[in-house]
Length: 530
Image 1: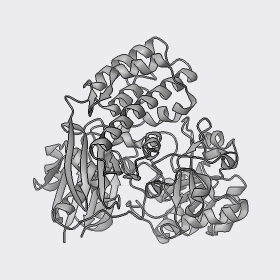
Image 2: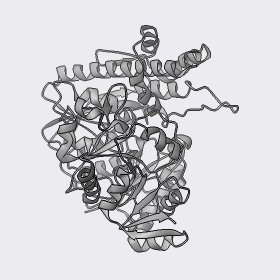
Image 3: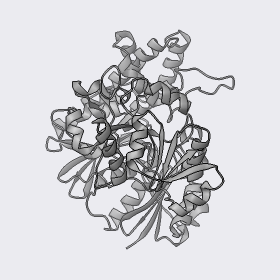
Image 4: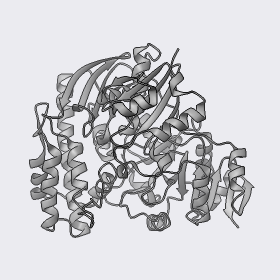
Protein backbone atom coordinates (compact mmCIF):
# COMPACT_ATOMS: atom_id res chain seq x y z
CA UNK A 1 0.00 0.00 0.00
CA UNK A 2 1.14 3.51 -0.78
CA UNK A 3 1.46 7.06 0.45
CA UNK A 4 0.33 9.57 -2.19
CA UNK A 5 0.60 13.36 -2.11
CA UNK A 6 -1.48 15.42 -4.53
CA UNK A 7 -0.99 19.11 -5.37
CA UNK A 8 -2.65 21.84 -7.37
CA UNK A 9 -1.29 25.37 -7.73
CA UNK A 10 -0.10 28.11 -10.03
CA UNK A 11 -3.59 29.13 -11.12
CA UNK A 12 -6.16 29.72 -8.38
CA UNK A 13 -7.48 27.77 -5.38
CA UNK A 14 -4.26 25.84 -4.60
CA UNK A 15 -4.41 22.89 -2.24
CA UNK A 16 -2.53 19.82 -1.08
CA UNK A 17 -3.83 16.37 -0.19
CA UNK A 18 -2.51 13.15 1.31
CA UNK A 19 -3.95 9.66 0.82
CA UNK A 20 -2.44 6.67 2.55
CA UNK A 21 -3.37 3.07 1.83
CA UNK A 22 -6.36 4.23 -0.20
CA UNK A 23 -7.76 6.37 2.65
CA UNK A 24 -7.96 10.17 2.77
CA UNK A 25 -5.68 11.45 5.54
CA UNK A 26 -5.63 15.22 5.09
CA UNK A 27 -6.59 17.89 2.52
CA UNK A 28 -5.92 21.60 3.03
CA UNK A 29 -6.63 24.66 0.92
CA UNK A 30 -3.88 27.25 0.81
CA UNK A 31 -6.26 30.15 1.49
CA UNK A 32 -7.01 28.83 4.99
CA UNK A 33 -3.37 29.39 5.91
CA UNK A 34 -2.47 32.50 3.91
CA UNK A 35 -5.74 34.14 5.08
CA UNK A 36 -6.19 35.51 1.54
CA UNK A 37 -9.21 34.26 -0.39
CA UNK A 38 -8.20 32.33 -3.49
CA UNK A 39 -10.05 34.76 -5.76
CA UNK A 40 -7.76 37.52 -4.48
CA UNK A 41 -4.58 35.47 -4.78
CA UNK A 42 -4.12 34.10 -8.29
CA UNK A 43 -0.97 32.25 -9.38
CA UNK A 44 -0.28 31.01 -5.84
CA UNK A 45 1.06 27.61 -4.84
CA UNK A 46 0.24 25.08 -2.09
CA UNK A 47 3.37 25.85 -0.09
CA UNK A 48 1.89 26.39 3.36
CA UNK A 49 -0.69 23.64 2.94
CA UNK A 50 2.02 21.15 1.98
CA UNK A 51 4.05 22.11 5.04
CA UNK A 52 0.99 21.92 7.29
CA UNK A 53 0.08 18.40 6.19
CA UNK A 54 3.65 17.24 6.72
CA UNK A 55 3.75 18.72 10.23
CA UNK A 56 0.28 17.48 11.14
CA UNK A 57 0.69 13.91 9.87
CA UNK A 58 4.45 13.42 10.18
CA UNK A 59 4.50 12.09 6.60
CA UNK A 60 7.11 13.95 4.56
CA UNK A 61 6.55 14.72 0.88
CA UNK A 62 9.99 13.36 0.00
CA UNK A 63 9.25 10.08 1.78
CA UNK A 64 5.94 9.52 -0.03
CA UNK A 65 5.72 6.79 -2.61
CA UNK A 66 4.09 9.09 -5.18
CA UNK A 67 3.74 12.83 -5.75
CA UNK A 68 1.12 13.89 -8.29
CA UNK A 69 0.59 17.40 -9.68
CA UNK A 70 -2.52 18.51 -11.55
CA UNK A 71 -2.15 20.36 -14.84
CA UNK A 72 -1.22 23.09 -15.41
CA UNK A 73 2.00 22.20 -13.59
CA UNK A 74 4.57 24.87 -12.82
CA UNK A 75 7.72 22.78 -13.13
CA UNK A 76 9.89 25.05 -11.00
CA UNK A 77 7.57 24.71 -8.02
CA UNK A 78 7.05 20.97 -8.53
CA UNK A 79 10.79 20.34 -8.67
CA UNK A 80 11.42 22.51 -5.63
CA UNK A 81 8.88 20.56 -3.59
CA UNK A 82 9.68 17.06 -4.82
CA UNK A 83 13.29 17.17 -6.06
CA UNK A 84 12.18 16.41 -9.63
CA UNK A 85 10.37 13.21 -8.73
CA UNK A 86 6.71 13.73 -9.57
CA UNK A 87 3.91 12.75 -11.93
CA UNK A 88 1.26 14.76 -13.77
CA UNK A 89 -2.46 14.26 -14.16
CA UNK A 90 -4.89 16.10 -16.43
CA UNK A 91 -7.01 18.85 -14.89
CA UNK A 92 -10.40 17.42 -15.81
CA UNK A 93 -9.28 13.84 -15.24
CA UNK A 94 -8.56 14.79 -11.62
CA UNK A 95 -11.96 16.49 -11.39
CA UNK A 96 -13.85 13.50 -12.79
CA UNK A 97 -12.00 10.86 -10.76
CA UNK A 98 -12.51 12.86 -7.58
CA UNK A 99 -16.26 13.12 -8.08
CA UNK A 100 -16.95 9.60 -9.33
CA UNK A 101 -14.92 7.77 -6.71
CA UNK A 102 -16.42 9.72 -3.80
CA UNK A 103 -19.97 9.40 -5.16
CA UNK A 104 -20.68 5.95 -3.74
CA UNK A 105 -22.65 5.30 -6.93
CA UNK A 106 -22.97 1.82 -8.38
CA UNK A 107 -24.03 0.83 -11.87
CA UNK A 108 -23.83 3.16 -14.85
CA UNK A 109 -22.76 6.72 -13.98
CA UNK A 110 -21.84 9.84 -15.97
CA UNK A 111 -18.97 11.85 -14.46
CA UNK A 112 -18.92 15.39 -15.86
CA UNK A 113 -16.51 18.23 -15.15
CA UNK A 114 -16.92 21.75 -16.50
CA UNK A 115 -14.99 24.91 -15.63
CA UNK A 116 -13.00 27.74 -17.18
CA UNK A 117 -10.27 25.34 -18.26
CA UNK A 118 -7.15 24.16 -16.52
CA UNK A 119 -5.08 22.66 -19.32
CA UNK A 120 -6.31 22.20 -22.88
CA UNK A 121 -9.91 21.38 -22.02
CA UNK A 122 -12.90 23.06 -20.39
CA UNK A 123 -15.03 19.92 -19.95
CA UNK A 124 -14.84 16.15 -19.94
CA UNK A 125 -17.51 13.47 -19.79
CA UNK A 126 -16.72 9.95 -18.59
CA UNK A 127 -18.86 6.83 -18.79
CA UNK A 128 -18.36 5.01 -15.50
CA UNK A 129 -19.38 1.57 -14.30
CA UNK A 130 -18.15 -0.66 -11.47
CA UNK A 131 -15.01 1.40 -10.84
CA UNK A 132 -14.06 1.71 -14.52
CA UNK A 133 -14.00 5.05 -16.34
CA UNK A 134 -14.05 5.55 -20.12
CA UNK A 135 -13.75 8.98 -21.73
CA UNK A 136 -16.78 9.83 -23.88
CA UNK A 137 -16.19 13.53 -24.63
CA UNK A 138 -13.35 15.98 -24.22
CA UNK A 139 -14.03 19.63 -25.05
CA UNK A 140 -11.00 21.58 -26.21
CA UNK A 141 -10.42 25.06 -24.81
CA UNK A 142 -9.67 26.53 -28.24
CA UNK A 143 -12.88 25.34 -29.90
CA UNK A 144 -15.46 25.21 -27.09
CA UNK A 145 -17.47 27.88 -25.33
CA UNK A 146 -17.32 27.95 -21.53
CA UNK A 147 -20.39 28.78 -19.43
CA UNK A 148 -18.09 29.29 -16.40
CA UNK A 149 -16.18 31.94 -18.40
CA UNK A 150 -19.47 33.73 -19.04
CA UNK A 151 -19.95 33.98 -15.28
CA UNK A 152 -16.33 34.78 -14.46
CA UNK A 153 -15.95 37.64 -16.93
CA UNK A 154 -19.43 38.99 -16.26
CA UNK A 155 -18.65 39.28 -12.56
CA UNK A 156 -15.42 41.20 -13.22
CA UNK A 157 -17.28 43.78 -15.31
CA UNK A 158 -20.62 44.17 -13.59
CA UNK A 159 -19.37 46.41 -10.77
CA UNK A 160 -16.73 48.25 -12.76
CA UNK A 161 -13.16 48.97 -11.74
CA UNK A 162 -11.30 50.79 -8.97
CA UNK A 163 -8.78 53.61 -9.39
CA UNK A 164 -6.03 51.05 -10.09
CA UNK A 165 -8.00 49.48 -12.93
CA UNK A 166 -8.77 46.35 -10.89
CA UNK A 167 -12.18 44.71 -10.97
CA UNK A 168 -14.24 45.49 -7.87
CA UNK A 169 -15.75 42.01 -7.98
CA UNK A 170 -13.42 39.09 -8.72
CA UNK A 171 -13.78 35.90 -10.70
CA UNK A 172 -13.55 32.68 -8.67
CA UNK A 173 -14.90 34.67 -5.72
CA UNK A 174 -18.02 36.72 -6.42
CA UNK A 175 -20.03 34.65 -8.92
CA UNK A 176 -22.23 33.45 -6.07
CA UNK A 177 -23.49 36.99 -5.54
CA UNK A 178 -25.03 36.97 -9.00
CA UNK A 179 -26.58 33.56 -8.41
CA UNK A 180 -27.99 34.79 -5.10
CA UNK A 181 -29.69 37.75 -6.80
CA UNK A 182 -31.10 35.75 -9.71
CA UNK A 183 -34.43 34.69 -8.13
CA UNK A 184 -35.24 38.34 -7.39
CA UNK A 185 -35.10 39.29 -11.09
CA UNK A 186 -37.28 38.46 -14.08
CA UNK A 187 -36.98 37.41 -17.69
CA UNK A 188 -35.88 40.15 -20.08
CA UNK A 189 -35.75 39.03 -23.71
CA UNK A 190 -33.20 41.65 -24.72
CA UNK A 191 -30.71 40.78 -21.96
CA UNK A 192 -31.21 37.04 -22.51
CA UNK A 193 -30.41 37.44 -26.21
CA UNK A 194 -27.35 39.57 -25.48
CA UNK A 195 -25.98 36.84 -23.20
CA UNK A 196 -27.00 34.12 -25.65
CA UNK A 197 -24.93 35.91 -28.33
CA UNK A 198 -21.86 35.23 -26.20
CA UNK A 199 -22.46 31.49 -25.86
CA UNK A 200 -24.96 28.98 -27.23
CA UNK A 201 -25.38 25.21 -27.43
CA UNK A 202 -26.53 22.71 -30.04
CA UNK A 203 -25.74 19.08 -30.93
CA UNK A 204 -23.11 18.48 -28.23
CA UNK A 205 -21.32 21.75 -28.98
CA UNK A 206 -20.98 24.90 -26.87
CA UNK A 207 -20.05 27.77 -29.19
CA UNK A 208 -18.44 30.09 -30.11
CA UNK A 209 -15.10 29.71 -28.32
CA UNK A 210 -13.25 32.51 -26.53
CA UNK A 211 -16.23 33.11 -24.25
CA UNK A 212 -14.24 35.12 -21.71
CA UNK A 213 -13.09 37.86 -24.08
CA UNK A 214 -16.55 38.21 -25.60
CA UNK A 215 -18.21 38.31 -22.18
CA UNK A 216 -15.86 40.96 -20.91
CA UNK A 217 -16.36 43.18 -23.95
CA UNK A 218 -20.16 42.84 -23.89
CA UNK A 219 -20.64 43.24 -20.13
CA UNK A 220 -18.16 46.15 -19.98
CA UNK A 221 -20.28 47.84 -22.64
CA UNK A 222 -23.46 47.12 -20.69
CA UNK A 223 -21.84 48.64 -17.58
CA UNK A 224 -20.98 51.85 -19.45
CA UNK A 225 -24.52 52.09 -20.79
CA UNK A 226 -26.07 51.90 -17.33
CA UNK A 227 -27.43 48.35 -17.35
CA UNK A 228 -26.30 47.81 -13.75
CA UNK A 229 -26.88 51.17 -12.10
CA UNK A 230 -29.62 49.91 -9.76
CA UNK A 231 -30.15 46.82 -7.63
CA UNK A 232 -33.19 45.85 -9.69
CA UNK A 233 -31.15 45.96 -12.92
CA UNK A 234 -28.49 43.75 -11.35
CA UNK A 235 -31.18 41.28 -10.34
CA UNK A 236 -32.65 41.20 -13.84
CA UNK A 237 -29.22 40.59 -15.38
CA UNK A 238 -28.55 37.83 -12.85
CA UNK A 239 -31.91 36.17 -13.54
CA UNK A 240 -31.19 35.96 -17.26
CA UNK A 241 -27.61 34.80 -16.75
CA UNK A 242 -28.91 32.00 -14.52
CA UNK A 243 -31.71 31.10 -16.92
CA UNK A 244 -29.38 30.89 -19.91
CA UNK A 245 -26.98 28.70 -17.92
CA UNK A 246 -29.78 26.32 -17.03
CA UNK A 247 -31.26 26.27 -20.53
CA UNK A 248 -27.97 25.47 -22.25
CA UNK A 249 -26.65 22.92 -19.80
CA UNK A 250 -29.95 21.07 -19.33
CA UNK A 251 -30.23 20.78 -23.12
CA UNK A 252 -26.75 19.26 -23.15
CA UNK A 253 -27.71 16.76 -20.44
CA UNK A 254 -30.87 15.78 -22.30
CA UNK A 255 -28.75 15.13 -25.40
CA UNK A 256 -26.40 12.98 -23.31
CA UNK A 257 -29.40 11.06 -22.02
CA UNK A 258 -30.64 10.45 -25.57
CA UNK A 259 -27.23 9.08 -26.55
CA UNK A 260 -26.61 7.15 -23.32
CA UNK A 261 -30.11 6.32 -22.00
CA UNK A 262 -28.92 3.78 -19.42
CA UNK A 263 -26.83 6.38 -17.55
CA UNK A 264 -29.25 7.99 -15.10
CA UNK A 265 -26.86 8.75 -12.25
CA UNK A 266 -24.67 11.83 -12.59
CA UNK A 267 -21.70 13.13 -10.64
CA UNK A 268 -20.24 16.58 -11.18
CA UNK A 269 -17.07 18.56 -10.56
CA UNK A 270 -15.65 21.88 -11.65
CA UNK A 271 -16.55 25.43 -10.80
CA UNK A 272 -19.86 25.47 -12.70
CA UNK A 273 -21.34 23.14 -10.08
CA UNK A 274 -20.85 25.57 -7.25
CA UNK A 275 -24.12 26.87 -8.74
CA UNK A 276 -26.65 25.22 -6.43
CA UNK A 277 -29.60 26.55 -8.45
CA UNK A 278 -28.34 24.77 -11.57
CA UNK A 279 -27.80 21.63 -9.50
CA UNK A 280 -31.42 21.80 -8.34
CA UNK A 281 -32.66 21.98 -11.93
CA UNK A 282 -30.52 18.98 -12.86
CA UNK A 283 -31.83 17.05 -9.87
CA UNK A 284 -35.41 17.76 -11.00
CA UNK A 285 -34.94 16.27 -14.50
CA UNK A 286 -37.44 13.38 -14.68
CA UNK A 287 -34.94 10.89 -16.10
CA UNK A 288 -32.28 11.57 -13.47
CA UNK A 289 -32.17 9.07 -10.60
CA UNK A 290 -29.51 10.79 -8.49
CA UNK A 291 -26.85 13.46 -8.71
CA UNK A 292 -23.72 14.04 -6.67
CA UNK A 293 -21.47 17.08 -6.57
CA UNK A 294 -18.07 16.47 -5.00
CA UNK A 295 -17.93 18.80 -1.94
CA UNK A 296 -14.72 20.58 -3.01
CA UNK A 297 -16.20 21.00 -6.48
CA UNK A 298 -13.86 23.79 -7.63
CA UNK A 299 -10.16 23.63 -8.38
CA UNK A 300 -9.42 23.34 -4.65
CA UNK A 301 -10.60 19.72 -4.99
CA UNK A 302 -8.07 18.82 -7.69
CA UNK A 303 -5.37 17.71 -5.26
CA UNK A 304 -7.79 15.13 -3.87
CA UNK A 305 -8.75 14.02 -7.37
CA UNK A 306 -5.07 13.56 -8.24
CA UNK A 307 -4.51 11.33 -5.21
CA UNK A 308 -7.63 9.32 -5.97
CA UNK A 309 -6.67 8.76 -9.60
CA UNK A 310 -3.24 7.49 -8.60
CA UNK A 311 -4.75 5.22 -5.95
CA UNK A 312 -7.15 3.86 -8.59
CA UNK A 313 -4.28 3.28 -11.03
CA UNK A 314 -2.46 1.36 -8.28
CA UNK A 315 -5.53 -0.74 -7.48
CA UNK A 316 -5.77 0.68 -3.94
CA UNK A 317 -9.20 2.20 -4.66
CA UNK A 318 -11.35 -0.08 -6.79
CA UNK A 319 -14.89 1.25 -6.51
CA UNK A 320 -16.75 4.42 -5.51
CA UNK A 321 -17.09 5.07 -1.79
CA UNK A 322 -19.05 7.55 0.31
CA UNK A 323 -17.58 10.28 2.47
CA UNK A 324 -18.72 10.46 6.08
CA UNK A 325 -17.54 14.07 6.18
CA UNK A 326 -14.94 16.44 4.74
CA UNK A 327 -13.22 17.36 8.01
CA UNK A 328 -9.79 16.88 6.44
CA UNK A 329 -8.02 19.89 7.98
CA UNK A 330 -6.03 20.03 11.20
CA UNK A 331 -7.87 19.05 14.38
CA UNK A 332 -7.22 20.55 17.84
CA UNK A 333 -7.80 18.83 21.19
CA UNK A 334 -9.11 20.49 24.36
CA UNK A 335 -5.63 20.92 25.83
CA UNK A 336 -4.37 22.77 22.77
CA UNK A 337 -7.49 24.93 22.71
CA UNK A 338 -7.27 25.71 26.43
CA UNK A 339 -3.64 26.77 26.14
CA UNK A 340 -4.48 29.22 23.35
CA UNK A 341 -7.47 30.58 25.28
CA UNK A 342 -5.28 31.70 28.19
CA UNK A 343 -4.27 34.89 26.39
CA UNK A 344 -7.91 36.02 26.47
CA UNK A 345 -10.11 37.01 29.38
CA UNK A 346 -13.01 34.68 28.60
CA UNK A 347 -15.43 32.81 30.82
CA UNK A 348 -15.12 29.07 30.21
CA UNK A 349 -17.79 26.44 30.86
CA UNK A 350 -18.36 22.80 29.98
CA UNK A 351 -20.46 22.55 26.85
CA UNK A 352 -24.11 21.85 27.59
CA UNK A 353 -26.14 21.39 24.37
CA UNK A 354 -29.48 22.23 25.99
CA UNK A 355 -28.10 25.54 27.27
CA UNK A 356 -26.67 26.48 23.88
CA UNK A 357 -29.95 25.52 22.18
CA UNK A 358 -31.72 27.88 24.58
CA UNK A 359 -29.22 30.65 23.76
CA UNK A 360 -29.89 30.12 20.05
CA UNK A 361 -33.62 30.22 20.62
CA UNK A 362 -33.15 33.56 22.40
CA UNK A 363 -31.43 34.99 19.32
CA UNK A 364 -27.73 34.63 20.19
CA UNK A 365 -25.04 34.11 17.53
CA UNK A 366 -22.99 31.00 18.26
CA UNK A 367 -19.58 30.13 16.83
CA UNK A 368 -19.09 26.39 16.29
CA UNK A 369 -15.56 24.95 16.05
CA UNK A 370 -15.19 21.15 15.95
CA UNK A 371 -13.15 18.46 14.18
CA UNK A 372 -10.68 19.35 11.45
CA UNK A 373 -11.77 22.18 9.18
CA UNK A 374 -13.79 21.36 6.08
CA UNK A 375 -12.26 20.78 2.67
CA UNK A 376 -14.19 22.87 0.15
CA UNK A 377 -16.25 26.07 0.19
CA UNK A 378 -19.04 25.01 2.56
CA UNK A 379 -19.17 25.26 6.35
CA UNK A 380 -20.55 21.86 7.36
CA UNK A 381 -20.17 21.73 11.12
CA UNK A 382 -16.43 22.02 11.43
CA UNK A 383 -16.21 25.82 11.27
CA UNK A 384 -19.78 27.17 11.36
CA UNK A 385 -21.83 29.98 12.84
CA UNK A 386 -25.27 28.97 14.12
CA UNK A 387 -28.39 31.03 14.71
CA UNK A 388 -32.14 30.50 14.94
CA UNK A 389 -33.93 30.31 11.55
CA UNK A 390 -37.26 31.65 12.73
CA UNK A 391 -36.77 35.43 12.57
CA UNK A 392 -37.08 37.36 9.31
CA UNK A 393 -34.63 40.03 10.55
CA UNK A 394 -31.85 37.48 11.11
CA UNK A 395 -30.29 38.11 7.67
CA UNK A 396 -29.64 41.80 8.34
CA UNK A 397 -28.55 41.20 11.94
CA UNK A 398 -26.06 38.49 11.01
CA UNK A 399 -24.72 40.36 7.98
CA UNK A 400 -24.11 43.40 10.18
CA UNK A 401 -22.12 41.36 12.67
CA UNK A 402 -20.17 39.60 9.93
CA UNK A 403 -19.66 42.80 7.91
CA UNK A 404 -21.13 41.09 4.86
CA UNK A 405 -23.16 42.63 2.08
CA UNK A 406 -24.06 39.50 0.15
CA UNK A 407 -27.51 38.79 -1.26
CA UNK A 408 -27.03 35.06 -0.82
CA UNK A 409 -29.57 33.59 1.62
CA UNK A 410 -28.22 31.74 4.63
CA UNK A 411 -28.45 27.96 4.61
CA UNK A 412 -30.33 25.58 6.91
CA UNK A 413 -28.96 22.53 8.62
CA UNK A 414 -31.70 19.94 9.00
CA UNK A 415 -32.07 16.78 11.05
CA UNK A 416 -32.16 13.93 8.53
CA UNK A 417 -35.31 12.53 10.14
CA UNK A 418 -37.33 15.61 9.14
CA UNK A 419 -35.91 16.46 5.71
CA UNK A 420 -38.85 15.01 3.74
CA UNK A 421 -41.32 16.86 5.94
CA UNK A 422 -39.78 20.22 5.00
CA UNK A 423 -38.64 19.86 1.36
CA UNK A 424 -40.29 18.49 -1.78
CA UNK A 425 -37.54 16.70 -3.70
CA UNK A 426 -36.24 13.51 -2.14
CA UNK A 427 -33.45 12.62 -4.61
CA UNK A 428 -29.71 13.08 -4.07
CA UNK A 429 -29.75 13.23 -0.28
CA UNK A 430 -26.13 12.09 -0.02
CA UNK A 431 -25.02 15.16 -1.95
CA UNK A 432 -27.29 17.30 0.24
CA UNK A 433 -25.16 16.24 3.23
CA UNK A 434 -22.59 18.64 1.75
CA UNK A 435 -24.93 21.57 1.00
CA UNK A 436 -24.50 21.49 -2.78
CA UNK A 437 -28.13 21.52 -4.03
CA UNK A 438 -31.16 23.74 -3.55
CA UNK A 439 -34.55 22.23 -2.75
CA UNK A 440 -38.07 23.65 -2.90
CA UNK A 441 -39.56 24.33 0.53
CA UNK A 442 -43.02 23.06 1.44
CA UNK A 443 -45.58 25.80 1.93
CA UNK A 444 -46.24 25.18 5.62
CA UNK A 445 -42.54 25.62 6.46
CA UNK A 446 -41.80 28.84 4.59
CA UNK A 447 -43.05 31.12 7.37
CA UNK A 448 -41.55 28.93 10.10
CA UNK A 449 -37.95 29.27 8.92
CA UNK A 450 -37.78 32.53 6.91
CA UNK A 451 -34.12 33.22 7.74
CA UNK A 452 -32.97 30.26 5.61
CA UNK A 453 -35.45 30.50 2.71
CA UNK A 454 -34.84 32.51 -0.47
CA UNK A 455 -37.51 35.18 -0.33
CA UNK A 456 -38.49 35.09 -4.02
CA UNK A 457 -38.39 31.47 -5.15
CA UNK A 458 -38.79 29.88 -1.67
CA UNK A 459 -35.84 27.52 -2.12
CA UNK A 460 -33.20 26.59 0.42
CA UNK A 461 -29.73 25.06 0.27
CA UNK A 462 -29.96 22.56 3.13
CA UNK A 463 -27.38 20.39 4.78
CA UNK A 464 -28.75 17.08 5.96
CA UNK A 465 -27.23 16.19 9.34
CA UNK A 466 -27.18 12.53 10.36
CA UNK A 467 -26.88 11.35 13.94
CA UNK A 468 -24.47 8.55 13.03
CA UNK A 469 -22.12 10.79 11.01
CA UNK A 470 -21.85 13.96 13.12
CA UNK A 471 -23.53 13.33 16.47
CA UNK A 472 -22.58 16.63 18.12
CA UNK A 473 -24.00 18.69 15.25
CA UNK A 474 -27.13 16.52 15.20
CA UNK A 475 -27.46 16.80 18.98
CA UNK A 476 -27.61 20.61 19.01
CA UNK A 477 -30.33 20.42 16.34
CA UNK A 478 -32.21 17.91 18.46
CA UNK A 479 -31.98 20.11 21.56
CA UNK A 480 -33.22 23.12 19.60
CA UNK A 481 -36.06 20.98 18.24
CA UNK A 482 -37.13 20.08 21.78
CA UNK A 483 -37.45 23.78 22.60
CA UNK A 484 -38.91 25.13 19.36
CA UNK A 485 -40.41 22.18 17.51
CA UNK A 486 -38.16 23.29 14.61
CA UNK A 487 -35.56 20.67 13.50
CA UNK A 488 -33.60 23.34 11.63
CA UNK A 489 -30.87 25.85 12.43
CA UNK A 490 -29.25 28.58 10.36
CA UNK A 491 -25.68 27.70 9.42
CA UNK A 492 -23.21 30.07 7.81
CA UNK A 493 -19.46 29.94 7.38
CA UNK A 494 -17.24 30.98 10.29
CA UNK A 495 -15.70 34.09 8.74
CA UNK A 496 -16.33 37.79 8.30
CA UNK A 497 -16.51 39.59 4.96
CA UNK A 498 -13.73 38.89 2.44
CA UNK A 499 -11.73 36.48 4.58
CA UNK A 500 -11.40 32.68 4.37
CA UNK A 501 -13.20 30.45 6.85
CA UNK A 502 -11.27 30.27 10.13
CA UNK A 503 -8.56 27.67 10.47
CA UNK A 504 -7.33 27.60 14.07
CA UNK A 505 -8.59 28.33 17.61
CA UNK A 506 -6.85 31.70 17.79
CA UNK A 507 -8.80 32.95 14.78
CA UNK A 508 -12.02 31.66 16.34
CA UNK A 509 -11.27 33.34 19.67
CA UNK A 510 -10.61 36.65 17.91
CA UNK A 511 -14.19 36.60 16.56
CA UNK A 512 -15.48 36.18 20.10
CA UNK A 513 -13.26 38.94 21.44
CA UNK A 514 -14.41 41.46 18.82
CA UNK A 515 -18.05 40.54 19.56
CA UNK A 516 -18.79 39.04 16.16
CA UNK A 517 -20.10 36.13 18.25
CA UNK A 518 -22.07 35.97 21.47
CA UNK A 519 -20.62 32.58 22.44
CA UNK A 520 -18.09 30.14 21.03
CA UNK A 521 -18.50 26.37 21.28
CA UNK A 522 -15.05 24.95 20.68
CA UNK A 523 -14.16 21.38 21.53
CA UNK A 524 -16.00 20.42 24.71
CA UNK A 525 -16.20 23.94 26.15
CA UNK A 526 -18.13 27.16 25.71
CA UNK A 527 -16.35 30.50 25.88
CA UNK A 528 -18.03 33.86 26.53
CA UNK A 529 -16.75 37.41 26.92
CA UNK A 530 -16.71 38.46 30.59
